[in-house]
Length: 62
Image (cartoon, rainbow, N blue to C red; front, side):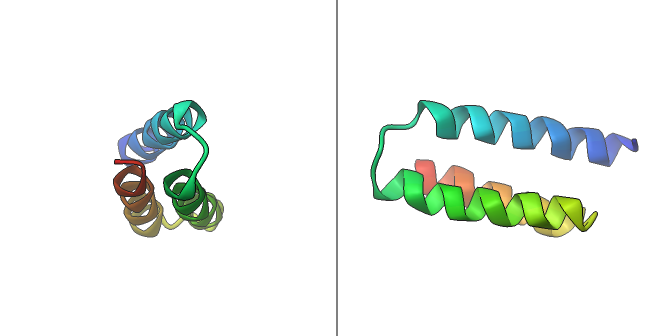
């Protein structure tokens, strides 16, 4: 894995942990959609899109 891929993997873990701790509600639902899009982008090896969706998920939880 490249350093960029490692950062992305760590970010995914961090966002997933934040999502797990979030209370049920519209923010959590919105974040889940972004997280699922990030997983899909990550599977496609698209780091830029993965990070964009992870940022959106983080923002949705805020």
